[in-house]
Length: 315
Image (cartoon, rainbow, N blue to C red; front, side, top):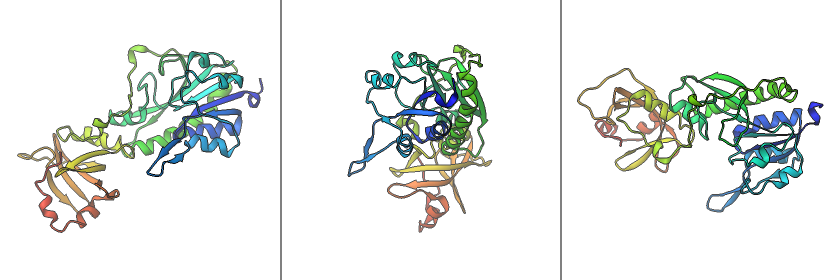
């Protein structure tokens, strides 16, 4: 079968899915895009399209938005796709979709499966202190992210990475791996590799309680938490009962005795030193309640008696 004659349906929703979709549009026949229903946000309930829908509309590709794809899938089958590709779609596909297309369904996942199955693999990779992650393309099965591996490529997690930067690099990698994988997959030149279930771990979606910083933890653990939640949903703490979001911290080599974890122990020109379990973290960027994110230097410059911060405690 000629590659550009293959009928592909793409399922995705967030920004992460945009680069793979655009690559497919440039090289294959995308007959429809399936994405999550539009959202209403803000006081005026403005209707927001998903990033994937915006791309589809730009290229005049039909868009389907079932509220529950497990029951509302017949329209997709009626398009008679040769292949369905999912990438951060956001709903579990029913068996009727998984096995009907000629080349079945494949999924682009942002981890080195079987590690970090689930909805938050980018966040978890950083929060758990992994040194590498990657993209895995699998043939889908009813079990979440457990299908046989078609292709896989790794990517180093840099010390300077946060969720935003790693997200962007992985999205680019997903595009590249998809384009290099599809020709051999369609021509049945790839031997599928069964995942090792005993090595499986899970990257469940971030719960609200995980956003709060526990200053009793080690500095590396808090460092990973902060960058693993930046730029969304963002870690936070409280000072005098007021929520302060913490956007960026760096690890210090200082140690302190007879201090309480969470206590402000030193003010730098461009940061706020905080005692933690095994030393000190320096807050570099933060966001006080009802204000925008700012550099710690700007925050300190806005305080008249900033020396009074010493000894106060974050909770």
